[in-house]
Image 1 (spheres, rainbow, N blue to C red):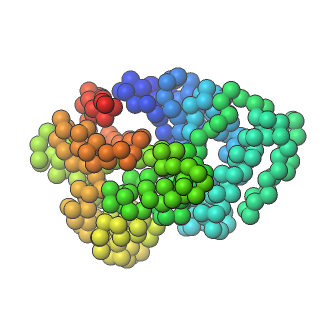
Image 2 (cartoon, one colour; image 1 turned 180 degrees about the vertical axis):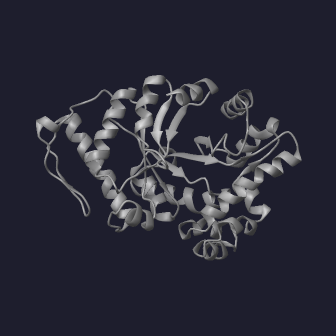
Image 3 (cartoon, rainbow, N blue to C red; image 1 turned 135 degrees about the vertical axis):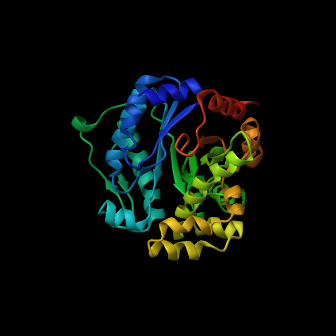
Length: 324
């Protein structure tokens, strides 16, 4: 897969695929063959349309194929997509995801250690694994699990049972400091872990250029994307943490199908708080100043589709972010 090779050449240390228009797992099988240095992960795969057994098998194969570089990123999606796009029953997404993760680890333990498969959860039950269907042990069986979430429950769950947390691109530092990080820390403490045991990963909207006019132009697609995300009730915690009052208006407009008009509702203040705006030569410093030590993995949201950075410019930003 040429994209993975380009990512390695640019200086990225990971390559992640999303479940949007394409399957999130299949590209990583190709990427594993193209490079032997990048971490490979889903960011994210929707959990509930897939049985934990199916996800466990695909993840096991990718961990084997990549030599232990695979990271499983899971998300719940919202009710409408689960019931209407995937035609799956919707029920208690947070507790269900917790049971899903426990199921995965029980299955992997059976394959790695020849232990009887015994998982009896509130949502999933597994008790049969015959030798014909058992793939057997692999060299790197400890597959990291990241989850994505917005509210306190999934943040706490990440602290309790996960290796990482995918922070949605629609976020602010206030939201991280008031909602995400405290709840992950609380969940971690409840099981004898700490915040340091959970990697934070996110994507950032970049707004840059050679001058003020180019930066202002780059703000408009970000404004549109904020209006789309901000119209969804699931993202209300971001508004509450940041003191914004235009969520209800966006939500009402989305219900009326007024998608093209929604961006005008989003003020510059919100665009600059969600995205990072800076001249190209100061962009890496601006990102580092924004996040400090809050985030361990950071990518660029829709890079190349709304922002035209050439290879050298992009490599310069990546190198600046990796500098000590």
